[in-house]
Image (spheres, each protein chain N blue to C red):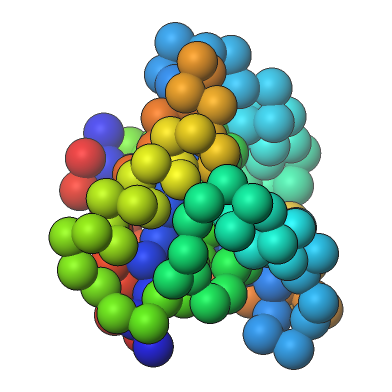
Length: 81
Length: 81
């Protein structure tokens, strides 16, 4: 079955404490070269079929339920399994 | 600056209560057609440059720090901004 992925990330202007915590820990673990880290959510939705209606419904689902659009952006894309 | 994305998802055989909660709520919100939902984490890492060493370092970072490999799988990929 086709899979639709919804990625939800904090908006760039919003402080991302989780990302900052990961970024702060990297040097202590010996990792260098990463200049910024942002952490968000990934939803994998299994659907019977992918068409414009299904993608429109998933966008509405993301906007009203999966993401808090005051502080988060989201993207919807079809992923080959 | 190039961006490397690390996606961390629960292993298929692992129960995903968050995904199940989302799946269970969809019909009440009027959404149909989604047969399964899995929820994971998405990390966006900004790096100075992308090369094999950096990707190897990020894979080690994912394996030892970003993911709990007992219950989670992860993928590492370079994303065009």
